[in-house]
Image 1 (cartoon, rainbow, N blue to C red):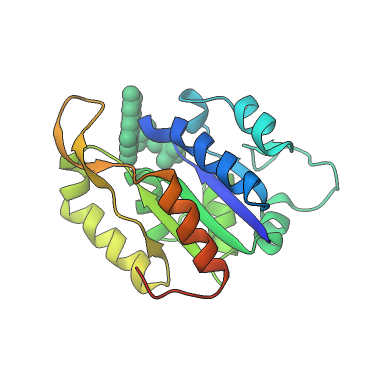
Image 2: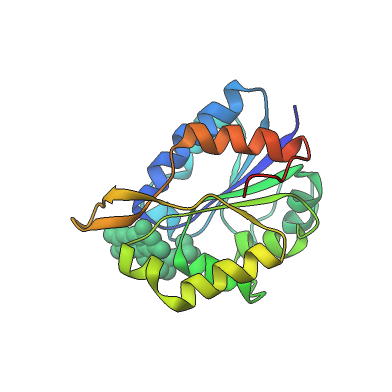
Length: 184
Ligand SMILES: Cc1cc2nc3c(=O)[nH]c(=O)nc-3n(C[C@H](O)[C@H](O)[C@H](O)COP(=O)(O)O)c2cc1C
């Protein structure tokens, strides 16, 4: 089926990435999981290791078993990249070419691959013009974006910002891998 790099960042919705990882594995994809340091505050690498049955990558400078340069080999072997959930912070870094951790460095090295962003954040953050500008920058750079949904947020606010459902995200990834960029 192909190999997907799943990037997870430090938002409340990080636990939903476990559902996405599980769906991708069931669909027959190989999944490489890269978590930011802050994502590990919300859910442990162990959860994803058990789901994808492979090591989870969190550190640019940790030795890896095949002696390769981790961020480059992870980018090269990905057929597609998804960041789910994507924080405002990750979106800002990716839009500006910042590479100060493993995930953002992999993203720089994977710019020719199909890439999908699944933002999730508080409504006020989502509506911040700087976040919207960064989203538009990433779209212009070839990213697909599955926008957050409206509803009740973890902080108690109502509005747009909830992570889209993992089911449609997995379905969209399949289309992306087949070269269909038509939707978003
Ligand atoms: C309880 C809590 C929940 C958070 N939820 C979100 C969120 O849903 N979306 C977001 O963009 N940032 C959220 N943040 C802020 C991020 O964790 C923060 O910007 C962090 O620097 C992101 O790091 P990363 O992008 O490297 O993972 C949250 C912070 C806390 C303490």
